Length: 105
Image (cartoon, rainbow, N blue to C red; front, side, top):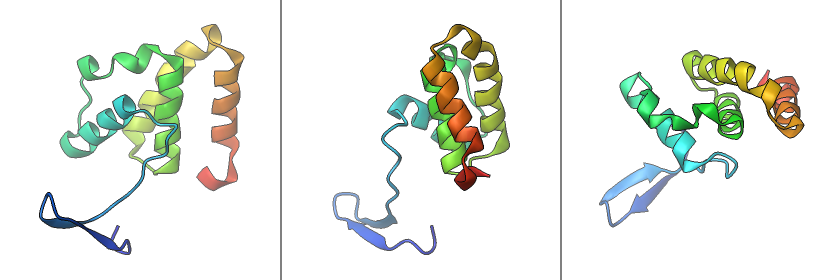
């Protein structure tokens, strides 16, 4: 973040480094990531998506792309472990592609 150029936000009267979140990561998933980053916890009532394989793939993608803390990665992997056997093969393919990509290793 320190190397990012600052953008003036006149409405908020501040300068900030803007970071665009990958469009494949929903607001719901990113909101829980931010909650964890600020509070260090994830409340189940804020993560109803943990029973949705697609949303868990989004969390995995966020963890790998943005090098998020390990507890978030473990959360995604634990839920995917239980959800993938009963889910569409496309989710398994996405997980495989994410986990084997050189850019995330």
